[in-house]
Length: 109
Image (cartoon, rainbow, N blue to C red; front, side, top):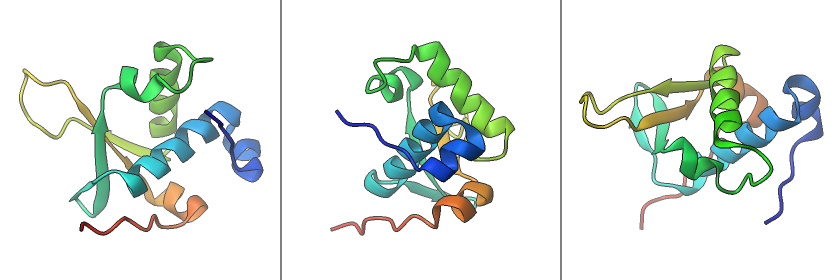
């Protein structure tokens, strides 16, 4: 698998965060996001999201996701409302949409 990143974004937030943010951006575009609270949300287990990043640990990917949240680039919520399920939902914040452009979602066929 090939990983690449936007140089200007990496200079702004760091290489690892740029890789994570752009991967999330592409998940929003390519997966079937749920629109909620005006944002396109995707859900995944961090361990599954981290699989392509063989050079990063699951904990490192989790930490980078939460740093991106703290920095205002992404939104993370537990939207299912039950104690049984711990899946987190992820969305791009307005700040990241301004940097990366509004994702053009694939239309359902």
